[in-house]
Length: 277
Ligand SMILES: [Zn+2]
Ligand SMILES: [Zn+2]
Image (cartoon, rainbow, N blue to C red; front, side, top):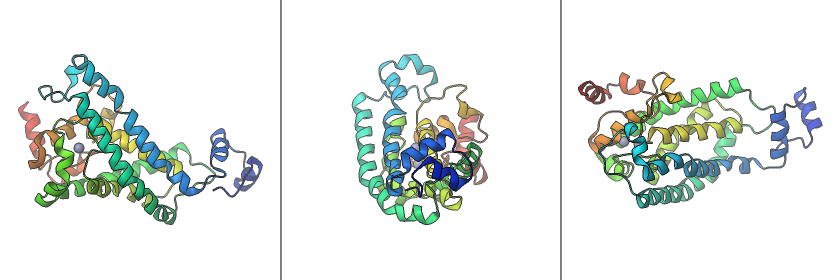
């Protein structure tokens, strides 16, 4: 909750006139408890996973030939609408039963690490720099946790659920055992803990991270997607190979950037596969 109730009080506190975005934020959050603002995350999560995979999934289900050229596993058995719907229902259930309670219990930690909700709002550059750090931190930790999940114990008890989709699709990005959702969700908080920012930056980070996961699992490799121009970016084709090989795979553990797989030598199978094509 903001310590000032009017634009004049806020302007006096920060020593300048409010920008349009700050005036909007003041109106929206002046009387909102911080817990309520933090709880927006679960709502954003549900909206992102309901809407972002929808257009491509719809085309893939009902007009598959129109984009078949870009399908990464063109000979795979097409998924049925019932399978997609079941996947989505299970993802929503996991979010509500796992991520929801986590939101409540992690709130004290969020306060503790110093994520702020007040004014001034962060600049675009500040947000971009912080989110870039969050991506690098999250990617490194995700790599090692994911690699740990590919041990016999981790795979049989937890990670095999995510690999039920040998041919991934957007809705399958968070389709996983609840323990995996928790374990792989933690690294997303480490960057914000190391470099705390504004709650708006935190929201944006979460939304971008999940959109990225949906793209990585979309099952299609479209030319000239903007992410193709990000250095060392994995992309859909890279992670698709990880799903295609399945539980026995010892490569492509990274989810965002390729450099960890390169440094630790876990991209050799993929490189060999590419060289044979
Ligand atoms: Zn895996
Ligand atoms: Zn995956």
